[in-house]
Image (cartoon, rainbow, N blue to C red):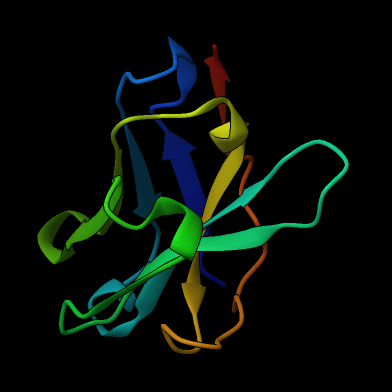
Length: 120
């Protein structure tokens, strides 16, 4: 079982930036596709961005051009750089390993997530 610890969330104004980090346990990180998901109050969890083990990426249309996903295999860490934040980005953000970066599904139990709140 792989476990995830997310951090980096906070409360910001619209237009500002945040960088989220997620550290994964275990020795399989470098061969796993990784993804960031988010869940807003009253809504289903949705995929935000995913990155394959080779560095190829996939983004939700709502964040393209504003968010960048990256990974550091030596640190078992995946990042989400979020620029030009909007109030509609407000959500709890989670990471997970994914079966594939397009049309995939999360593989492990969710961590505690990190709250992002964007005010206008």
